[in-house]
Image 1 (cartoon, rainbow, N blue to C red):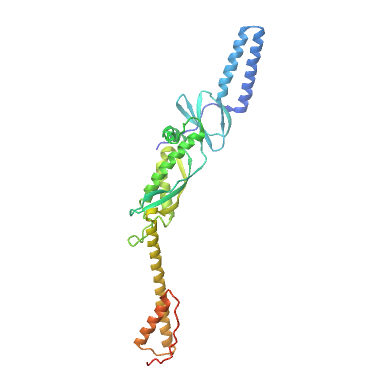
Image 2: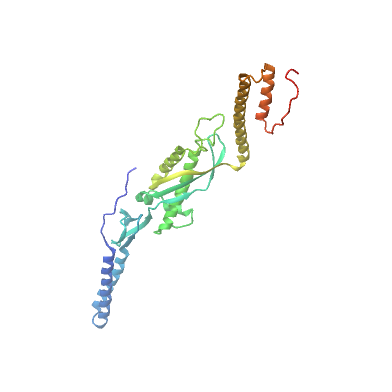
Length: 314
């Protein structure tokens, strides 16, 4: 998209110099009026004209703070963006609207979306953004319409203008979050063990979210500094069921580790008994020992020892 923003090239004068000049003109006008009271009406008219002109010219003062900008318009025509920090005087017939270029933070409330496999999940994001293109911000989108949902009127007040942009960013961020969340499953199951999921929290998901937001907000001249998912959970209606499923999966994985370790320990015990010549076991006795050891090693309860006072030939 073509960049239509440009720097203001019109006349600008140091504000403190012009303030001194206008005070001198106003003092001269007052002097002429007072002098005309005792002498002639011509001096009164000249004094009044000077005072009125001086008051009109006073409207041309502009103050710009760091990371602020003024959109300059001359009878509806865009004349550039003025962002030079300081106190200046410009043409008083140029109207200005102040915009903040400072970074702003948006902590969006979690919203309910459906993931790739249709599970309802609650997901939220945190977003850092700032205005980059003042022309697009002021003329490519309707800030007045955006502000109507907030019950405010957009004029020259920078706070009301920025609140309108915040509303725009919030709506677009929710749309982008729904789009990204619908492309991934919440977590892995038997059918998508190798796929990237929302629960993984991979940086690539945050990068994709930033890209989708940048595409949506570029029309408003808004730059995305950072965007990432900061809240993720199953929706309340399925949270209990999914928690039981996760617990079952965890139990199965733990059992697999226990059985794997138990088999290794049983094999080591039988091999050591045979290699050290402690006892000579036939297949039946090996099977009995394996069964007993597996029960002891894999059981949840503490094993109760039993002393065998008989012989192996019984």
